[in-house]
Length: 254
Image 1 (spheres, rainbow, N blue to C red):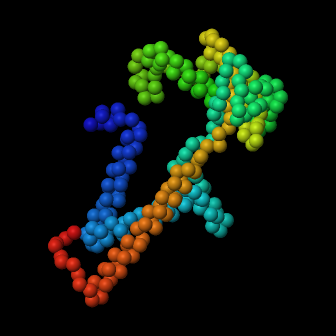
Image 2: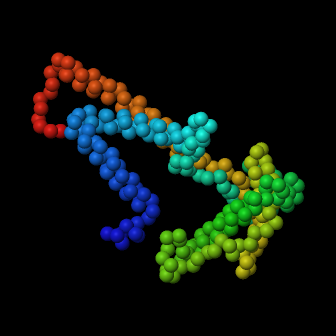
Image 3: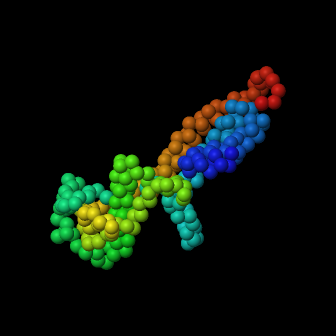
């Protein structure tokens, strides 16, 4: 069993962990509530409480905790995160490339492209890494088409496969530019053991870090709003029984 879990992809391990957590922590509470209120009422109490708690939790993910007496609490975007800001390759060529989205692309290495300056210098390392990873991915795809086994992140260390090291691609002549508020970068790169020089162009993708936080927040509000009216009706019906109504027949513990 442990060997099977070790070979399971990380995604499905996460699914199993979440399912077990729901069964253990939510299911155990439901068992207690259903024993006291019955199956339907117990579910409604649990659902309203659960979604209400999720509303507060996801609100902390979205906005963070405001300052209280000058003390800063939880910062925003510390919950589940979407795509991080990153450099994304949008064009590559052994010659001059063009792009309808960024018209200044074919002007590299001339104006408005310029050498890194000021706040652009710290981005040199991230641009280099993005270009190297892109070329390594392209090389892996070409090897796969040729029938050569390429190692993956989950491959065994003893597997007979080819490992493509991104650092074997040399990146140089990095220059920066911008277009309508989007940062651009371009560079020349080539394989250190031989091959043509490739010109690559990247843009700064702002990502979507808070997409899951907002999704949880909105879904929690919807779930809370759906269950509250049903809980209200069930509670009024239960109150009517306690104050003189007729109780349904009792068939033993719920």
